[in-house]
Image (cartoon, rainbow, N blue to C red):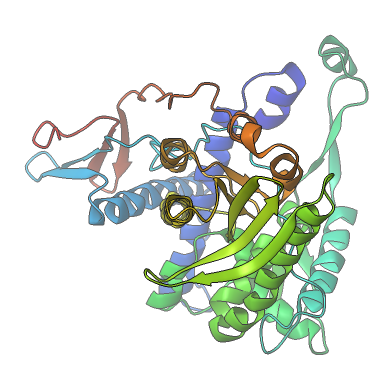
Length: 430
């Protein structure tokens, strides 16, 4: 309802997105705890709605604490513990990222990312038990059934007209009960979509998005949220995240095809430009050993392109790891330029364009970050592409504009107080 209100009146949706993300994280932890600690057949009396909401709230705060510990393990935050007063203070400090204060808000600073380019075809066997086509077929059927069970939230026409709209309505997410397919491979896809009933420690920490396992088994029945079924049927990332977790070996083998398709898309865009580029793929060099994914020449212009295939980051920790990968790619391109292989270079991904951490490195080395949608910009005018790609991620000037810090925040975590401070620790000002 908050998102609908923001959309109707043109208000910033940040607070609503924050609440939704925190709530979803809390629900996932509540479900993981239930799978790990509760008996398969619950005998306890029903809890009140307030008790359930408190459990969801606690799960959301616990996720914040988990993120803080992960960041602290890499020296990215400093944690102070005052045992006498039971206060845990997390000094988030620098650097600023699109998920700065990510341990709290998960608020993107850069403009919304363009969607990932699907590099997976129906016939790709991304696990040994099912193909991408099998997954898409089952999730489409589930999404259609979920949509048939939804009602619409209709905005009062007077409010809609005041906002310059008419007949504004949105689907109302609904809990739907679904049936397990009887035959393979559909039943195998469905089984992998079900949140594990028995939650071992390894799986517990691997599960970070409810959309990887949106189907919940309750007794002998299965339920899901209709909007979640729609999301997984439309966005390939959750299919790939699931495959990577349940069958890492087969997923890695199938990933080779995705890389080949990235190369083919890049080659096609450059060769079909006007005038066309002459393209070489996977050129290897020695002393020092290095490889260029794409080298292209047009007249006196020579460009190098490094390709990175990345899944959509779902948590602050994944943003940190994606950033590491992109920064590594930027430096790889800069080394090619330094050895005079090319005059200009670009890092191209299949979706994620990076945040302020990545772009600090990109601007320092004059190696902009784009995605496969941006190949026409690169092919048309490499010299002007830095400015245009920078504008696409919402960085308006040549300098990195560090956003203002957030006010101090406090959360209750069991009997402790969790404080989140968006500045450096006074004990470690450097």
